[in-house]
Amino acid sequence: MRRETVLRLWGIFALVLVALILADFAVHGHPNFGVDGAFGFYAWYGLLTCVAMVLFAKAIGVILKRNDTYYGG
Image (cartoon, rainbow, N blue to C red; front, side):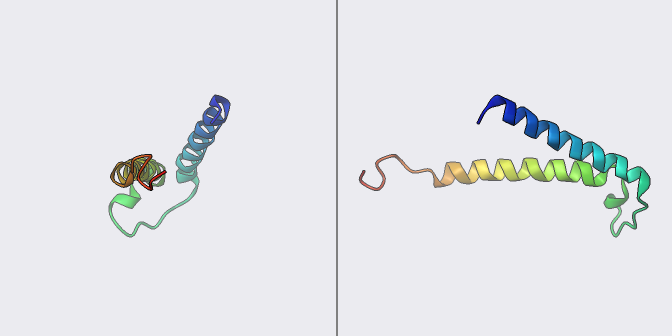
């Protein structure tokens, strides 16, 4: 992947997080649980969920990795 593409994706991701935080000022939420009423909840929840998915995918990759000659090739 090209460096410019990676930087552009990180920029878009950061803009989405900032937009979610700014939307917290405009939208009056009705929290169902105590924690989802916190300021910027959806921004940091999305960030933490994304990090958790990446770490989980890395762990699964380590578990499922096979040698190059696994299938006899």
